[in-house]
Length: 237
Image (tube, rainbow, N blue to C red; front, side, top):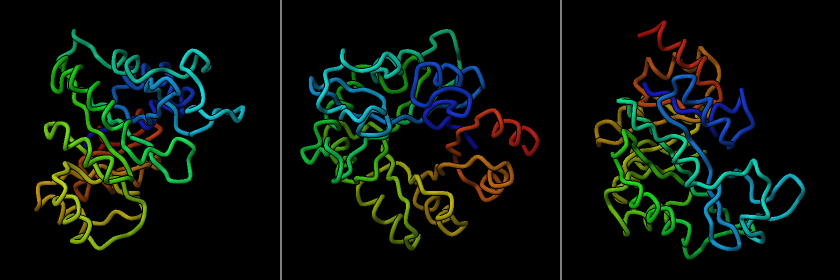
């Protein structure tokens, strides 16, 4: 089971910062998960919320108006690229697209920009792998329409019947399901694997829960504590 550092090693460093992503690499994570939004001048930046802590909306600011600790997506991808390493490293780019947010992207411009950046970066090159996830399946469908070679993952929070969820993902040609831990079951994992779909579970920090996911065959755990997850998996190979 892979260990994906949620917003970087976010228990060790400020989430979604270059320091957090560097820490994830240092702590031997298999990859990182991050959140992407766009600025007023259409730069892709990494930040979970639509607003900065001071209340300003990112979509209303140019990238040079953002705090220094907010990196661009390109900067994060460069930090996670290690030409000297023979270890594949996963970059899970989550597209934020909520109707109540000021940057709601009904036209899926962020999807198009992410696809362009990923195609330029090169999937599978530099010992790296990219997967794009979102709660908005239409954002993922836009990625697939631009380049079906880019892996995509449907994020879910609610509990859905495994067959229904898997059929929705398969119909869109998506690569993986990213369910919330409490919504994950053996039945879901079995149904997904039968259909050739990966199951990467978020956000899990408890060692016993991490071990449980490994035991029932989850493909990856998305966690704030990649060092803890690695220790659990090393003890339970």
